[in-house]
Amino acid sequence: MNDHISMRVNSARLSGIKGRTVRLPCKVLRLSDDTAIVEASDGGQVEIQRKNVDITATYVEVIGSVVDASTIKAMATLPLDSEGELDMQLVNDVIELTFESRFDKLFPRYKETEPSMPAR
Image 1 (cartoon, rainbow, N blue to C red):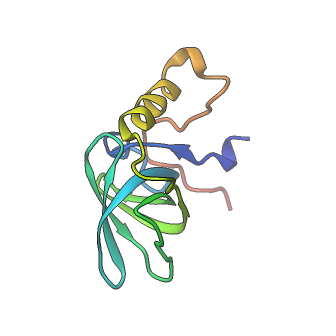
Image 2: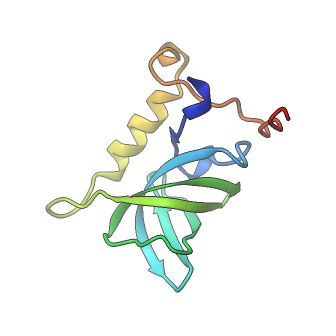
């Protein structure tokens, strides 16, 4: 089961999980050809490398691989827009709850270290 984890994270949770697949709920601040700058639920800014990945809404969940503590290489995005604003504080509260040890069985997560190389 741990092979298919894509944890929901905020910007503060990106450090220590380089190479892992994550889900980042965020607000799009700026778009350019192959990148986007987004604001994560905790208010931190993250660069999204988005070559061949469309961003079509103001609020999205980026699914991608962590490049470093402030960059994600996107594989896909999901629009989160509804009628108006998304309560990012509530989103962040939920993300932080998933990291509490009392929910370990409900929300499996990566250990905050570099991923090991796969066996050949």
